[in-house]
Image (cartoon, rainbow over all chains, first blue to last red; front, side, top):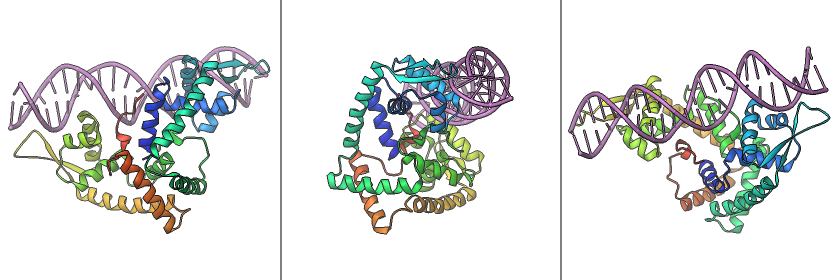
Length: 140
Length: 140
DNA sequence: TATTGTTATACTCTATAACTATA
DNA sequence: TATAGTTATAGAGTATAACAATA
């Protein structure tokens, strides 16, 4: 079911010219502007060279920019552009609509109950809020 | 959270030398022995040439076999081998243990409540029981 | 001609390892 | 030497299209 919800979300945000990988990264940068590629790599649990490609995408789409840090010219401070901020706002709206669509079968009480149950599981499983495990390589 | 559960399941079944794609296909063949590659492709929503690779894997691992149909020699009837049947049994046990692990935070009443809520969503969303959308190409 | 399965090919995603610039 | 980022390369997964065997 997670896969279904993810696929539907992907459909929705594609209207913004954005793919799921973009969405997660964009949100991380929006939440904590100025962060470096290294910090993203660590939090996502992926290799730094992969962040290069992800950030390249976002930059090519004009949603973020790499700003040189004059104090330490080795790293970049990543920031949303005006366009990126706009897309981020759109995405929040899409996120709400998406949740509403997925939960259409449930009334408000049931949604609250579902959320509480899932949160209990997430906490017990030690999941980091806000980081989608989909970035990490799948074990095989 | 679906991604987390899927990753943990992948870990568990890797002990059997099986990956998630194998697991789904193996179960489909176990449930309906003798089915053709075409029928799998249709139900999974993937292209027939992909089923060739998936079935090749399973056959290489000795879990299934392609049997020629003497009536219509164009298609294969897919069947589990003895080893495949054994792995399928193991997988069922792993599935139960997995569910139990994921739901460790909930008592029996809560699990029943969660299951009911999720089933309501799945039904409303028109999800085919037993087919994981992960086989289908992700829209971009 | 139509259907089942296969092969050839190309493209995307991702990791590893070597490399550059800066500290 | 160590760190941030990049490039080159290789491998896996997957679709498209052409193909062979059978009907």
